Length: 542
Image (tube, rainbow, N blue to C red):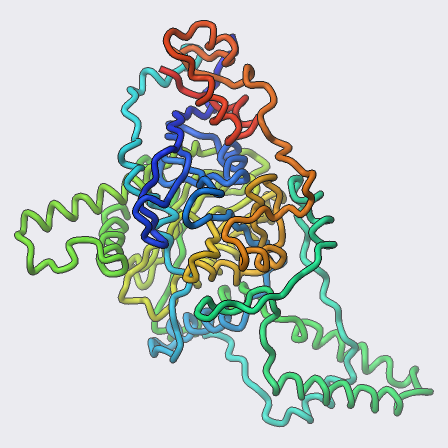
């Protein structure tokens, strides 16, 4: 009989036959998913599970039944090492800097909060409450285990500026360090050879993300003038390279950095003036009631969550004047309970290996403190290969700061920072991309990003997935029709089971079990978590 250690994941599989209300299309019974309760889980097991389409909500871990559910939810990951902020992203970063430096809280026409927190991503549905485990802790113990503004001005005299630039050689900035994912290495080759089909988005369904962003006419004219001046300058300099070269090299050294696009860090870590109106501090706090920082900020954080839910998601009490005091208190208790259940209770076991990031792996609250009070909290999981965004809630009074977008950009920058110490940690998982729900398409704006193939579990660039998603809400992204799930279950007997506090392979448990066979349920569980996880995690059987 195999010995169990303290780091073993222990799960209870519930299956997933009944349909529940969909938070996206509001279908009463259209939301279909498989689920299991994680009493404890290692960060490596959860990493492997989200790479197979799973996602957690508190301790409940679920996987949408992709070819049956009303709104297919595709796991999406961004590549921070290659990420460059778009114009709209820079706009949000500049807005924050203006607010911090000068207290400017003016709203710009067209501003909106595309990256709102993911209520349905984090709080799956009512089935979470139904399936909460009531197994006693003693049964789960195996017997063998005791992350102002430098204002960018435009030169009105564009032609004079371009004449200065023509003496500078074009500097090719080095590409960001590449982080190769073992599961996507093979698929990228196929992906690069795949034919892209550009389709026009249907009315009301947003921009066509498969096309490059539009360019300003002024930029195009400037590029043409620059090209023409460059040609003229080249002709006039022919025959006298020795006289020109020193000047070119000097200009190149002084302007090479200016020629590179600004990164997120150029906005986030810029020094504020001494007389800045506001001060923003981002604190990373482990999700643990044993942590002093977590405990001391718990009440303020929970109160912010309740305020957010009532204002943004219209949770009760929405009109406190119509409630008796006792009813208001009761509803607030429910909201506080939800806060603890979904955003504080995590099955992930904290780990701090020497080769990992300084903060270690596990679940964290990234708190945004403005002038001494919390205005936003990003709930994240730090895993061996990624930072996984779980949820965000913020003070509705600061909606004008687009905190959803701002926090996502901070988390991308944070992932880069962690990568410096832990080289394999180089992805930012944004939860689920739901193409059939227009308001959830904003996640595709963080490029480059990939979607997970729901059949073969390989990563495919989102540009190659969008055309097919326009025609069908459920798609197999891997274009190699012969490809199969490499991590599929091959030997059911090797699945690890925890039965009567004893760890054993399923083959042995099957012989000892009394009553009806549960082989079909165990087979379904193993096929969904994959062979590797099924041999590492402990499947609880009563």
